[in-house]
Length: 411
Image (cartoon, rainbow, N blue to C red):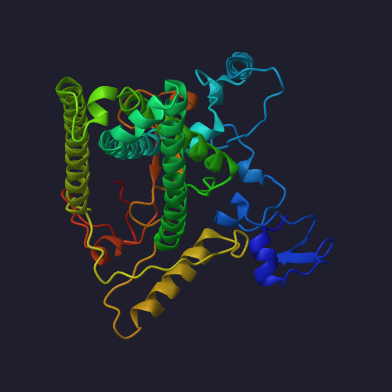
């Protein structure tokens, strides 16, 4: 199965690709399909998929490394699935105690796996900041509407004297507010789309989870429309009621206004200004703390020196070398040739870069302690590196000594 990106870049979008045989590590595979364009598969590291087949070394119960994805049947809840899988896990643990004793089955929603707690918290903070900006704008709009209603008091008084009911006047003011809010929402959508496109171009590849597709669709448009209308109605209601209760006798006089009514409007405008300032202050403090946290993160000691360090990946087929000795000799020869390149002061090979996690893991047993069942031993991840790895990256060894080709080191 090919991704759409691989199909277009490597095979020129050949419509006759189906049924074509491709060689992967010297083994023929038949193309049976192409993924749709723009799907999450075009944003992943993997560009093609082949059937899952286990080697003899992988057919063991001593390691727990497989992950499975499943779609629940209609009407089946996550709790029901967990209960049934717990039963299956308990049966496997009873039948195979050497590898599965005290082991169970963990079931999580796929969305929760993709959007982890840290990213979810960041999105909530961003949503709160956007909500504060919206409230500041709404309070400002309500204040401007109050001031505009005061200046139109004579107009409203004339309309009321000619027989316009209060409900009709309120509808007029609400229509104006909703129209203004809708136009503002449309401009905000255009600005948001432009900023979203700019940020997507500026972000490095694979910054966001590959399954997350940041885009604007019909749901975003409907949400923006509903929010704009609701904003115009909610924050235009109070100014509309204030503006449509004029003092007819005072308003018809040149410059005549009720002192009590003017005082009430002034208090409301002052309250809105206070709300704006309070929200702006909270937003400013939160933004300042985020900027401070960002600079603190930039100052965190990484444990290695990335200056002038260049990395490259070397794909090696699993069956290219018959024995581990041949593979080790090939890697040593490759690194030795890299060291002879002008400008290179050191080189080392590793199966994973710093801060990338680890590619290997297994349960372990401390020799001087009581023997523990294989199923219940602690497991740990580890990296396989050449001895010069620590010197090349400037990693300081706090205790002990650096390894050599004849020794093994754990960290």
